[in-house]
Amino acid sequence: MKCVHLVQGAPLVIAFSLLTTAAIAKPFTYVNARFGTSCTFPDEIFSDRLPEPENGDGQQWSAPDGASLTCSGIYNIDNDTPKGFVADEKANTGPGYKITYSKSGKNWAVVSGVKGDKVFYERRLFGKDGVIRTVWIEYPSSLKAKYDPLTGAIAASLRGP
Image (cartoon, rainbow, N blue to C red):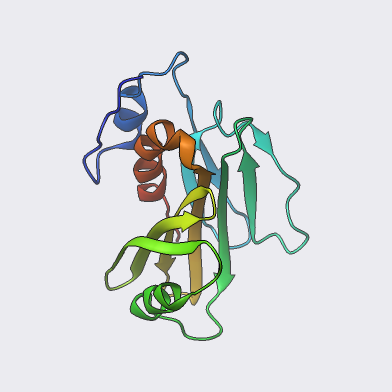
C-alpha cells in the first residue's frame, strides 16, 4: 500500500480519494444531537457502530482490524483550556502511555501518542458554549500506514455549533 501524506486543512473528500486502498472509502458525517458535535469519516472502515451511551454525549465505532473512533462532547465544568489539556496529557504517567505530538491554539488542542501497543490521536475543540468536542482515534501500531493518512482528515472534520 502506498502511504500518502496529507496537507493539513485539505478537504476531507480529497483526503479520502487519495487513499490507495482496495475499496474507495465513502465519507459519512455523524452529528451528535445533544451537543451538535460532528465529524466525517469512512464508514466502510469504521463499520461497527457501538451502542450510544444513555447520556447521548457521542458515539463510538470500531473497525474489524481493531481500530476505533469516538466523536463526542462534554460540558467543560472544570473550565479546562487547550494548553491545560495538553499539559495534563503530557504529565500522564500511566503504564505504556506516552505523548509523541501535541499542539494547541486559542480554542483547540491535539495530542497523539502511544498507549500500550496502540497509537492514538485526540483533537479537542473548546466551544464558546461551554462544551468540549472531541474526536479520538485509536489503532494497532502495526496498522500505522493504513490509519495515519485517515487520522488527520478525520480530526480536521471535527466541528461544533
